[in-house]
Image (cartoon, rainbow, N blue to C red; front, side, top):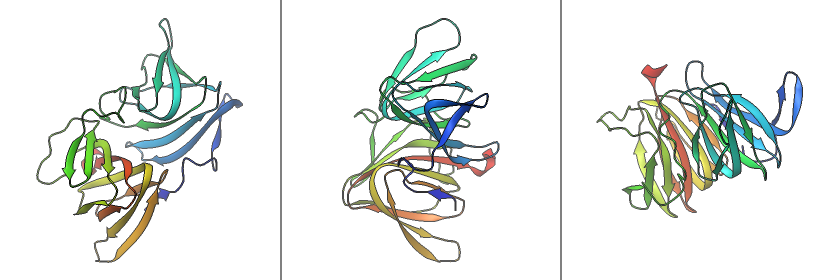
Length: 231
């Protein structure tokens, strides 16, 4: 079960290179890369950092901290994105990604990652899923009884809240954006394991694993379900 802890820390970053030359003030950290599936990586820009990336139609950038600018190849102004932006990468040619003051962003690649939004951490579009638990979908879906849809969204736990034990007929990816929680896993053979999660932890639960989450402090999580048939 691949997972990484404290991914927002200053440790274990790789310097970004272009044509073999190191780009000053730009680092990346790969969290997951599934062939023909979803990929998660972190991009960190120091003040004045600049890099170039070629985007695909469904690629998204979630700005976790700071502000960055996207400038498409060709004419047109740069587009600034602040903390909470769920931005699309322009698909025509290369995109210059830069930051005046520094930024930390999650780069998501895959199919059907949802529509761009200016501020996913703002008060709009949240729905309550249980006592003290809220969610916001980034990809608009209709749930079915098997709970095996493609889902991309955010989940917020108020202090002392929990989600009951539940299965997923999907691979299930979580990135803890803030806060802490205890996650109890139930494996097919009945074995149980409780893991403590905190800000910056990335977890990849394969199918079939059931889990239930309890947060004493409150937390916010990005979650993505990749249906097995999508692979």
